[in-house]
Length: 157
Image (cartoon, rainbow, N blue to C red; front, side, top):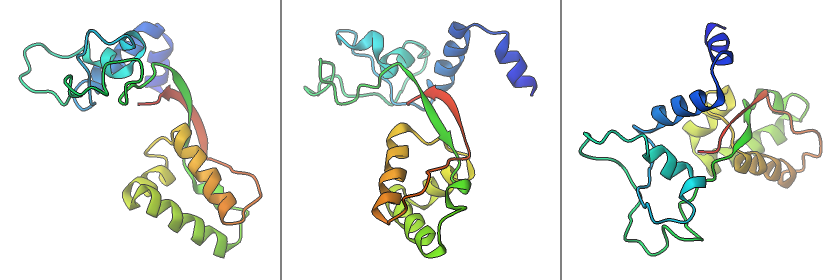
């Protein structure tokens, strides 16, 4: 509750700076200054917060010809999206056999740890993964509503 109140007093620029500084230590960053997409790319923007005294960063390969151009394979758009939280409500109305099949399919798709982190709400569910949940449910015959536990706006890291 206290964190929410503190966040309400901060500007969008301050919140963005805090988020980028937090990601700087463990996010794949980019330092290709000649890239035409750099001002819109999360990887490049996070890289701008890199500590110049640090010796090593995990970064994209600036020599790779697929990177740093109009169609960069590592480009991540600087745009906030609606992330879903939790999968526990998804299964409330569906039959047990269908729940089991959907759960097993998602575990195979995402891996056990990522599935259970997402199910509990410890890992946000990206728009791409939301679509995978919808596709998996429809594939296994569920025509009812796709209900997540909640949602929040965040960057699609």
